[in-house]
Amino acid sequence: MLAVGVETGRHTLTSTRGARMTTGRETFVQALARFQGAMSLRELARRARIDAGHLSRVARGVRPPHADLARALDRALNTDGQLEALVERKPARFEVDDFRPWETAELLGRIRAGAINNGTIESLEATVIELCCEYPTRDAHSLRREAHIWLGEIDRQLRKPVGLAAHEGLLHAAGWLALLTGCLEYDMGQRAAAEATRVAARQLGEEGGNPEIVGWSFEMSAWFALTQGRLGAVLDAARAGQAAAPGGSAAVQLAGQEAKAAARLRDKEGVRDALEHGRVLLASRPAPSRPDHHFIVDPAKWDFYAMDAYRLAGDDARAAQHARTVLQLGSSADGELAPMRMTEARLTLAAVAARGGDLEQAVTAGIGALSGQRKSLPSLLMVGGELDAELHSRYPGESGPADFREALRSVAAGT
Image 1 (cartoon, rainbow, N blue to C red):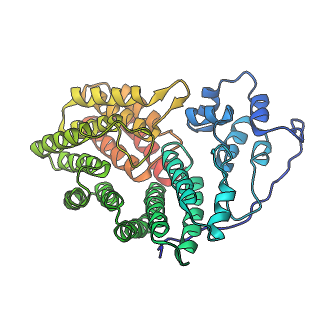
Image 2: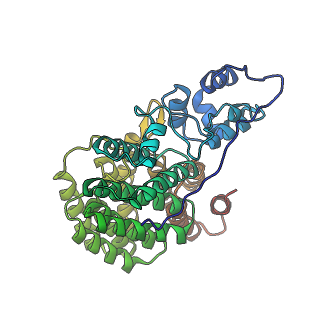
Image 3: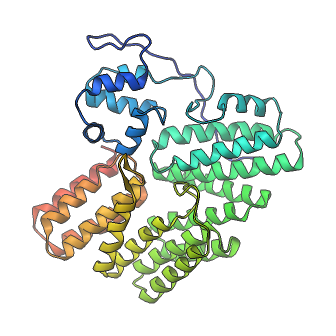
């Protein structure tokens, strides 16, 4: 059975009063447009400290609003909670996103009733894919809550007698959800919970006969070890994961983690070998239909790994080239598609500027990189800490490095 918990609770729709009160039948999108006025979405996203691309999709009705986003917008627009009041809440134990092409509530009902058939499993798999694709941009707390609720429903089904195929399908869905939940928990700084969830995901992958889930559980172990400075453990997890799931997306990403560890160990040959191995693996795989899926490595992500490795290896020209590619591929007319990758790309360019003697640009770019709404806190603190050390080493006694350190401390403290 699953070794992860489930959060539950009831939410009630609140109401507000005031001169700018929303009308009774006004939707969130309509109210947002009215409150926004002539302000651009990009400027509103900046003031609210949220991802501009995600806000654009919400404003067009492509994505549903969630309470955390609505609260941030209310603060930026001084609307006294009126947008949060329009965020639809279900009186049941679960929240649903109405933009999906299937009916989530109906699917949950079928699962609870024990009506597990091929159609139900396919719908469940589609739900899991959508949740994994929301990882880069959606609020981590909100996404984790929804993943926990789905895990609870699957857990209840696994306690009932179901057919072999349905049982395997439930295990696979639970495994992917556990991986997603563990990543979110680690992003939020919940180290112990993330490790417990990662172990549960590996066990689900082993029980369900899904080597890719097992491989990604090792990738998470490598990531955890990397951000904690346990570089030998990164290499051990990378090798174990690639042996468990050779040739898959997890193996590609594990090669990237191996390159990152080798760079921090000043092993230039190891960096080169790991990057080449990952590049060959990636080239052998078909182009992903959903490159935004967190557990599918797309070519754009490989630039992200190469950028980090070259920065640490001191190859500034290649590090800057890959960082600019990450920024270019992560941008769209709607905003940022991969805000966490782009944050680290900006920190890389800040490091390159520092090495080139441009302290002002380094500090400006570094502080700007820390202001993103969607963060992986351990990764951000690791790369930000490396930039901080370089600034203080190269520019002792200057005020700029102190300003960056203060901004980094604010991020670490959650302020």
